[in-house]
Image 1: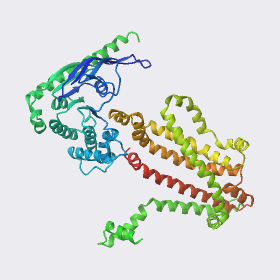
Image 2: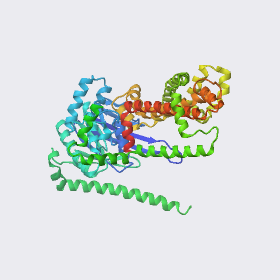
Image 3: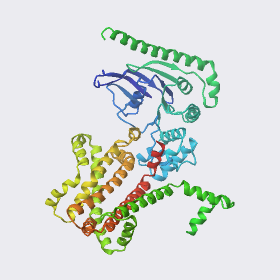
Amino acid sequence: MIEISGLAKTFPARGKDAPVDALKDVNLTINDGEFLTILGPSGCGKTTLLRMIAGLIPWDEGEITIDGRPIVGPGPERAMVFQSFALMPWSTILDNVAFGLELRGVSKAKRHARAAELIDLVGLTGFEGRLPGELSGGMQQRVGLARALAVDPQILLMDEPFGALDEQTRRLLQEELLQIWELSRKTVIFITHSMEEAVLLGDRVALMGPRPGRIVDITDVPLPRPRASAVDAIEGSEEFAKITANLWRQLREMQMFRRHAAEGRHSSSEPAA
Amino acid sequence: MNSAQTRRRPMTGGGLSRPRSSSLRTRILGSAWTYRLLVLVVLGGAWEIAARAAKLLLVPTFSGTIGGVIELIGDPKVWGAFFISNQALVIGFALAVVLGITLGLALARFRQIEGFVDPYLNILLVTPMAALIPILLMSLGIGLASRVFLVVVFAIPVIIINSRAGVRQVDPALIEMATSFGADERQVWRKILLPGALPAIMTGVRLGLGRGVTGMVIIELLMVAVGIGGLILNFQGRFEANLLYGLVILIVMEALVLVSAVRAVERRLAPWASQTVLRD
């Protein structure tokens, strides 16, 4: 279980810009085996939150614990999938997938065997010897997913993993991720700015708002599982439409509020100018 | 030869013979080398005509220069001169590579130091190194040491700067990725920063080699009349313009061979680099 309590982070003032409250009083509990999606407009601090859970950046206040142990840095029970794929262009697909194991000192034969298994799982058998530059974006992200799964983490942290992909590839990978996850049931925290993606994948959707970055709402997604084989039916269902519409209403309010705030600032500064 | 032919055959599809000649023609017309050769012929012809018309003592004809090159290749004195000069190049360039890469990486690692050193490094990069030669000779004498030192001074700035830039331009997402999988700093350097910086480092080495060759010739020309530089001065003094020009061509040829050797090493060590360039 991951427990986040009272988490806050302020980025210090830079030049003329005022300090930014990246996160303020974030409280969140993620259960074992849960697929939690975090949805929010850009700049709401969702990636910052994920990187804190990954142990990559520090925070100012509050605490994150995994099974009661506070996070102080990256750990073997967590693995991350990156929006930019973050593959090493000089390493073969096999070595990229085996990278996490290599860092942990697993012998070459063992890590290559394990990597081959995962390459098979994500459907890239035959590409082991290729370099990332020779693969399409969708294939590269499959490699990123295989690399994260190779270290057999308890928790998978996914930072807009399909954000850089085109629509078709994205849909295919969503289905594949569901398939893989529904077999292994790891804890997943999945960042996205797509409502449909958040609802289709998640058990719950945490909606984040900007300035200060905070959790505005948590929506349960009572859609049946397994979903991998029924994506079309789910997306056509009334329930799906209802949840998505509800999320959109809140997101739109956020955007409207933001625009009003911007206009308010603008008009108040006019007389002075 | 034989194996090359049998290997090529299936590609041209030996069945039909007619397209063969046309494919040869398109290959010739499509090859950049055809046009490069054409440029050489045009320039060489112009040179020949101009030199014959001008009849200057120090401007040899194109054909005379080619004759000079051939004459020089057959002359053991020339090989001796190249041997002497290249001693300084080999030692100096090796030192420049080792020191330059080490310094460049150190600068990339210790950002605080970098701030202090940066202006001086930039000065070093734009200083006309040849101006240092008299000072150098006063302190190191006219032996091999000065020549080695000058090669180092010529070659090292570009190697330092490229090594440092190479580390700096490694995708920060890769560093974050490695950190997230539990890499410590040593592992980040070995597995991410060094391989990531390798293409830029090799570019620095290649550019440094060109500058090293320049340094090698310049000090011999200006101060220590040995080796190739000594030979140049010799030909100049005897007004043997065709040999003088021929020697310059030989130097260029050596530099080209060395640079392509480095480039081959580069492709061997960093085959993904050219690919990334193509994709951008």
